[in-house]
Image (cartoon, one colour):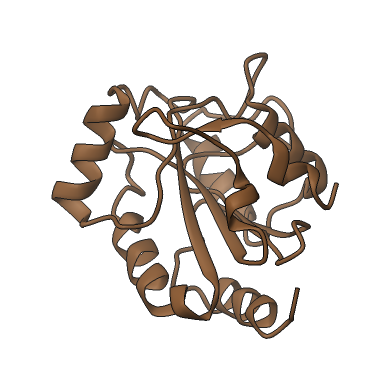
Length: 183
């Protein structure tokens, strides 16, 4: 698994074909994002985290997904404009993909297989169930803004629930640990 994440074909939000190989040696925080979600304001914290930690080797990567109540209906161009205009997003965004279901992107299949459990997920899962929303599979991505932390060698080392914000001490501690570890 160590290098396979780097080789999965992706498309950047501008249509450029890519993969995570260009981020080899960096600590990656992969986040499935959405523009019309109650958690959308997390974009601000993610951008601040990126700006603070980029020089130390952290790379935040956004993956728009429309899997949850159609909260990301726009085109890639609309998503890019929304993120730029409303949140000043500088971290890389990728083309919209699916994080769950039969059309789950291979990247998210690999991420969820490598890290089936989320840190801090109980309260958010319960809140969703209160709205009649239940994940079909306990290892599926629960909602928008779930976060996967990948170390400098391409190993998925942690997964955080959607409501674990960018300034959450658990997330920050995990990032700091990875930034302090050489590739």
